[in-house]
Amino acid sequence: MPLRPEEPAPESTHEVRLIAHVDMDAFFVSVERMDRSDLENQPVIVGGSTGRRGVVSAASYEARAFGVHSAMPMARARELCPQAVYIQANHKKYGEASRQVMKVLGDFTPSVQAVSVDEAYLDLSGTERLHGPPLLTAARIREAVLRETNCSASIGLASSRLVSKIASGLSKPAGILRVYPGGEAAFLRPLKVSKIPGVGKVMVQKLNRLGISTIGDLGNQSLPFLEAQFKNLGPELYRKARGLDDSELELDSRPKSIGKETTFAEDTADRAKLEAILTGLAEEASARVRRKGLCARHITLKIRFSDFTTLTRSFTLEKPTHLDKEIIEPALDLLRRTCAKEGRNRKFRLLGVYLSGLDESRAQPLLFGDRDREKEERLVESLDEIRERFGHEAVFSRKSVERIKKP
Image 1: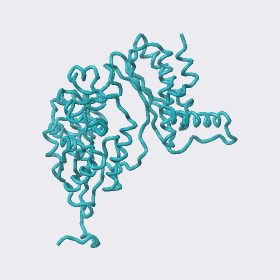
Image 2: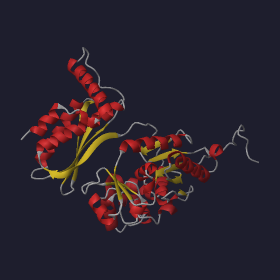
Image 3: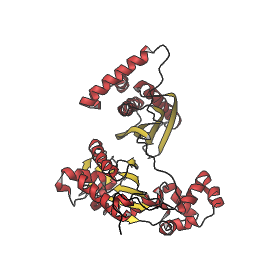
Image 4: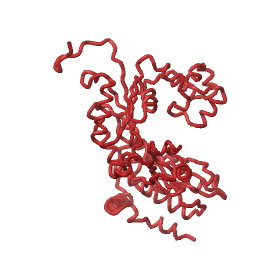
C-alpha cells in the first residue's frame, strides 16, 4: 500500500546516491528557434563570428549530420554545410534562457550545480518519495524544461557525477539513460577513452600508443603502471575507468573564472593594436567581475598565434581587485613578456583575458584611506553606468585610444 504524503518513509540502512546530469540539446540553436519558427528542421550554425575566421559555438543536429560540430573553424563548417543558416551568437539571450532552465531544475531539488549555461548536475538522492522513481523524475524534469523554455534536454542518471555526465551524452538528443548502482564499470567498459570527461586529444593519442583504446582497456591497467605513465593523473584515470567518483556537487553559485576573448578578422603582429585590444578585453572582464560583486586575484592571458599554437600565461595579484587599472597593467605586462619570448616574428590570431580566484570581499582599503583608489572606484562606477545603458563600446579608455594611435 503506497504511503500517504504525511506519512514518514520507512527507515533505510543505506540511501543510494542519485545524481542527474541535465545537458541541453544544441542550446544556442534551440534558443534562436524560439524566436524564429522558420529555423525548425533546418541546419543552423551559431558562432561568435559568422565570418570564415570564426568558430562554431553550436550546431543543430541537422547540421551535425554533415559533420559540423562545436569548436570547428567556421570556414570548415561552411565547406561541409554551405546551405546552413548562420547566426551570430547572442550570449545575453542565452544567459536569460539559461536562468529559466536553472529555475526549473531548482523546483525539483535545491542541490543544483550549474557548470555552464547549458548543463547542470542535480542531487536527487532521497527525492523518490516526493517526485517518484528516478526515471519518472527525469522524464518530469525534461518535460518541465521543454514546457517552460521550449528547449529539449538529455539526462543521465547514475550514482556519480562522472557516470551521469557520460550517460547524458550517450542519450542525446532528448533522451534519458540510467546506469544502475553496481553497473558503472560494465557500462563504461566498451566506450572509447575519449568519452571520459577531461581526457583530451593529446591524452587519447598517448593512451592509444599504449594499446589503450576503450575504457575497459584502461580499467585493465594497474595503478603503478598508470602512475608511471601519467604521474599525478594516473590515480584519477584509474578511478574514472572504474566509474569511481564520490565528488560532491559544488553548490556555490560563484563562477570559477570570468573573461573575454576575441578572434581577429586578420592575423596581426601590430603590438600597439594588440595592447589596445587587450586593454578593452581587460576592461570588459573587470566590468563583469564588478557586476557580480566580486574581486579577482589571478589574471590569465590567452594567446593563439596564426599557426593555431595556443598559450596561456598567468599572474597572481597581492590583493584581489575589481579595478580596471589594477587588472590591465599586469595583463599588458604578460603580453609584452610573451611577445618578447615566444612572439617574435609571429602573428596573433586570438587574444583573451580571464580573471579567477574570485572572491566576494573587496580589496582591503588602506588605514588612512587612499584618494587615488577612491577616485578609481568612482570612475569605474560611472563608466559601468554608461556602458550598462549604451553598451561597452560607448566609452573607451584614454590608454586604449593612445595605443591605437601609436604609429
